[in-house]
Length: 219
Ligand SMILES: [Fe+2]
Image (cartoon, rainbow, N blue to C red; front, side, top):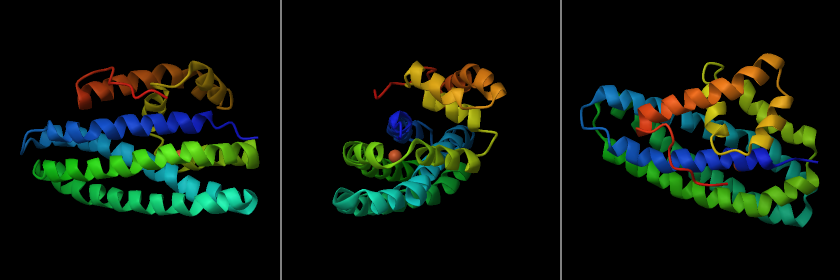
């Protein structure tokens, strides 16, 4: 059946990055479009990861649980869908404000507020998903079906940013889990990702947050 450890890994990454982004935006001086571009690039990456993560759950996980999870799923999946909608509204606000700030270095406070709103909706949702959904997935979803979630993400991510995204996910992940995840990857990726990913993430973190080792949120 499903091994849900990779979901905790993804959630930890999302919690950490979205927790750091509002301050990273506020730290950019008004009109400093050069700095705004650096931070905006990262906001864009993290928003893209969130979007694909939720899209995969909407397409793969909720339908499977509604089909098999009986009353327990029927009681929780609609709440998950409502929370996804609320998060997407906050997400649209962020992605709507981002281009203007990126181009002019103006409106950072408004963007940071929108990111704070996204964070609070997200934190509540991830906690409930871990408490109520993951135990149901372990019971009702097969390993092959579960892998479709990651496959959806891989298929739709830009190949250019994949090693950086992997490094960002690896940052707080259990090395045992990384080994297991890479065991399923083709040989070049298996060798390159664990070296390249963390380096790319450390240098991105340095540029965006001013440190190669941003504060961890824990699993
Ligand atoms: Fe999730």
